[in-house]
Image (cartoon, rainbow over all chains, first blue to last red; front, side, top):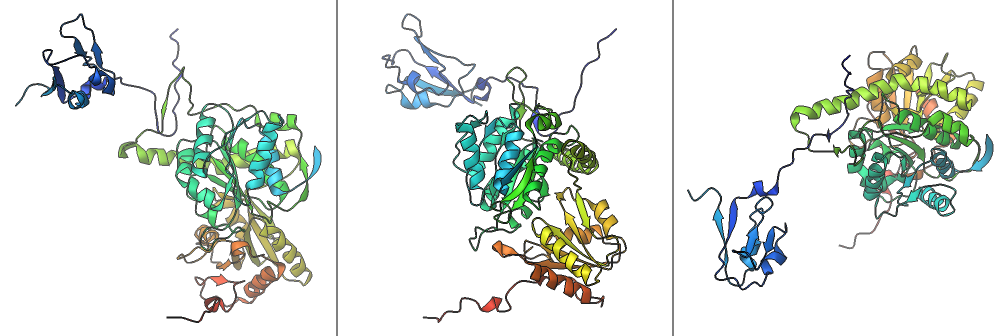
Length: 94
Length: 402
């Protein structure tokens, strides 16, 4: 016999189904890194509000953005003393 | 059963203790302060296994109680006057999310003028907040109505918060002998608390109080309205059960010597006792008078009041709040709407504001007026501020300096 599902109506404002959406989906501008200018001060990593910047000296480029979570806020660009981070529009310029 | 000498605040604390509240977040305000003090004392002396959360305002007090109750325990808070006004926003959250909180409310006038003393404007301002409102006449009623309130609030068919209102100082600070029920009897009557609707549980997550667009808002208000309607039907059964457990009888609205009365006064709260006393005296003089005492103002027991009002010619309604800008006091408005088609003259009286005593003289004066009001065409919509000084517009006369 098929087991009957237990169903109940909840009263009041409540949600029980959650859709996970990564914060990266909010992004309008994407950060782009220029390796030549960078002198590894890591100020960008310190200021990133979503902790989306990882640094690895052995890697090329040494700086990487986790684009799943980067919201494109541009704080890294603003704090960079060597202007080695630029923002470009997602989906290219129209 | 134990007989104790308690004041209203003490009785309220006794009831919360018997309901085994687990989280308390009460912010002290005159005349409710002894409730907050006594509860904290019970917690610190381990007489009540609860967490007492110190909060910085009444807004936080109720927020905290709401959150705590959602985790699946009874939470408690209590307030008065402007404290209730500061809770205004959260009152709606509690009722909208259908959280069966029970809160003692010590009635005190609202500002301005600043007053520490009793009238009903604070609770009347929240009469559409989605909370049930019970009004107590005596200290015994405070305890009983609070225990009853838990049963009503937590009932499957109701799930609404309840405030039990009692008059500041007249009840909160008046010591009366009362019967306090045994713990195990209250336990049997109330049963341990369990969240029946919304709850906070990491194993079964819910996002509570989310933004609700117009396509569901009306439906949720409708659910609340239906719950009030069901409450009117369910509470009498709970009251029957109450009698078997505690031996005391209550009704949503009670009549006192109304059966053969022509003239009736509708009362609310502690003034009812005085009104009954005056009725007894006037009965001795052969006057056919009676009292309708409203215990449950929300939900408003329309059918029962119509039953009591049947055949009466003149009804006076004594409000302890001014109903500013309205045609009369809030209780009067409700009574008028309830009895609209019954061809009864209904008069609004306003008395006892800001702590003024409603004495037997005041009530006698109202009855005398009502008994003389055989002429029907008198202006019913004119408020009668029965105990206000004739010189009201000329108090605090000053010499102007400019």
